[in-house]
Image (cartoon, rainbow, N blue to C red; front, side, top):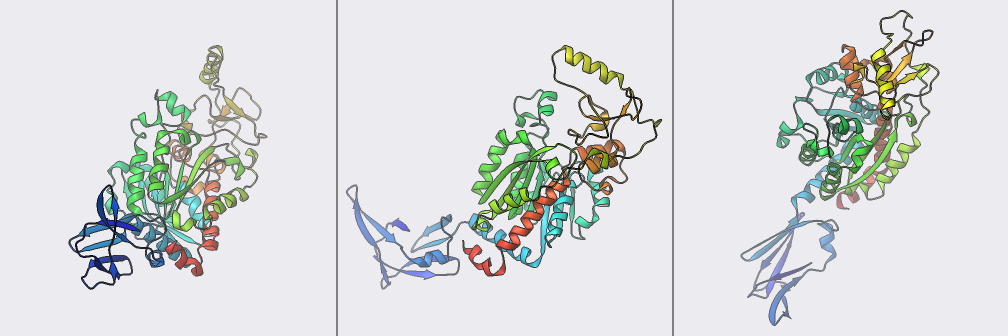
Length: 439
């Protein structure tokens, strides 16, 4: 470390503290300020070349250097202190077998359910410290149906994330964020006539609010979920840049639901951000490999179906959809109905508006009358996503399909949390805790 200063007295002392170094002018000091010629001027220089600096400040750490009359105080930048705090907290929590989580865009809690189950499988208990959700119907359902995720101290925030005061948010070990995809999905871009994802009226700026909360809660691990197309958005570019500047290493991949036991061919981007000090031994790459090793065969449609009477009111002719298909085909559009048989192995995506009976989403053919078909029930929809049916208890078919359609493949996130838990326990054992804190 080299500091250039103006100094009449050439002697100074070095005063070492646990978290800072103070250089103080002293006529009888142990060290001398050197000098050199530069551009015709004599420049005073303090050259500190000692291994002791490495015991205070991590390699490549940002420093805060305050110069005042008679002394210079060198200490880690506040951001470095935040990094050290979250890493030490995470290590202690993993070794204690109990971590805290924050949940943004909580919905009905599908992602949280999967993560909780995965951590539990790795012998780590997780408790949701706070859940933020704008739709009270979804949040109320989660509070009722997912009680095992919460405790007496959990804070439920029924609000737009933009209105959440980040300075009041508790620090958590891990943060979940299923950022709304309406501006990035193909259907959302088409429906809303968007030129780019950030143009969406309600979802476009959600990434900004997410980043504010991510910085405020200072989680050691962050898990982000979205549609595959989100990878190419400006929003995600900003997320990666900001999280990098906040001291995270990132891994991004695309996962297919049918690779993790689901019946639905839902393809989703997942980004896992790990605080840089925890990734000292390529922990993030190990997590990614472990997730892939958790792949399991899909569940055939026949295994998720309920038995409805042949004359049940759910069976419909949907002539308007058939006519639309004819018109779309004549217009050269690629929209087609998905009429499935019980013998089909998998199905396409069931979205949040599934109960509106839209033209391209899956329908089940009548066993005997092929002019009839029906939508999947909410129980079937849950099974298709490997979600517990309990998660939509008490909800109407309309709202249940919204919760499930906005949700995730639960088994995928169980695999993700299981992998994070297993690899973290393996990498961050007690005998490594001190080295991680200083890495």
